[in-house]
Image 1: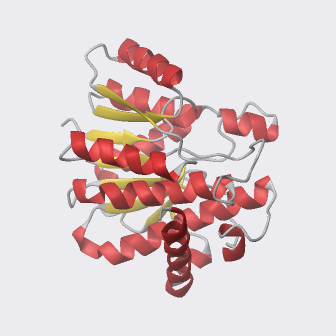
Image 2 (image 1 turned 90 degrees about the vertical axis):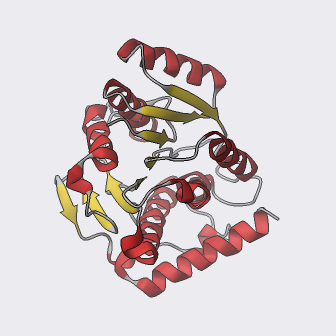
Length: 269
């Protein structure tokens, strides 16, 4: 059965390979990117995979919260239902880490954008829908002062903290939804995949991107993830595993969400 699936960061890397697999399976894709040209090129590539594929493109810079909100508004106006959201877009090394809000770009794109997207669009997802949040094997305890922009971090610290924060919020949201759905799933797609981000950060080619794409497709569509709400899948080990201990601490998760809400109330008003 064809599903309607939103993929952020779908114009290159794991997101593009995931989109190719999904369109090849006949799913209706909503692909996000920040470049009009790359979106056009991606649509052409997906047409080569499946010339009858149903693909819609949405342009937004996820470092700009106004554009994130506009993205959600456009999707909500054009769609009554989504079956899955894959929050794939992420950044690591950037020329300038400070955004217009005085926040670290890694926290904005890797955490705040998927937080807004999911909360704005979750009403479109049925009880058996899926939200797949791209975590990482690189995780580090979150400094809430750094999240708020009061403390500077290097690229490794900011990325690792943003990915743990994403995982913590995933567990918090899953617990709040409980059995009402949709399922919120945190996934480490595998370490050192051959994405542009990995090449720029570490100067290595990395492993086959299809390794990451395959697990994202499974997490979004496969029955093996029917009972995966509030779980963490580690593709380095090929199984569900306990997350970082902080993600299992409801008090820490709540403090993180409170901090996110405080930041968003400040920058969105």
